[in-house]
Image (cartoon, rainbow, N blue to C red; front, side, top):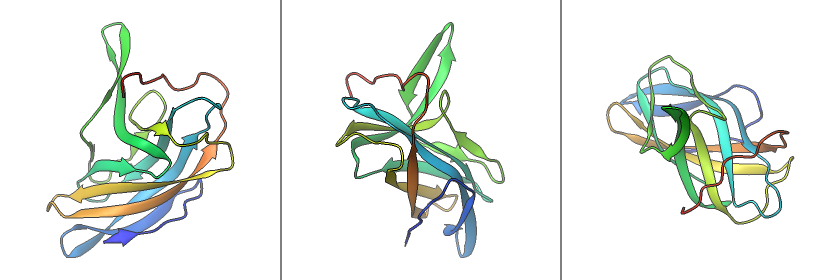
Length: 156
């Protein structure tokens, strides 16, 4: 089952069949993608996900990138490390924030620069407790941000 969504930077609610016969609502709040410089080949996508029932974000894809992965940044001793994770749990009723410096979606091998005002389509694949998979289509606006760009991912 596929759902399409044109997201704006505000809370959005979608009906997804993640809990068997009952329809669960997964809330996607404030989806956005960081703008890139001309030669930059990677950037991050961010949002907040809330599911009323236990679920898992399994993967994300986008036509703007050759590779899309769910990543986490975490301290390992005195060093901040970034790594791909096989999925992200969405505990029932708890907001899971994908944000700079934490869990996020990496868009790598970008096919073109992303500039503020663009919109990036993202397809989220979610799995409910019953192992039923659903897709969620989100359009995330591109935002220009001052400060540090995302860390480069060499070797991806």
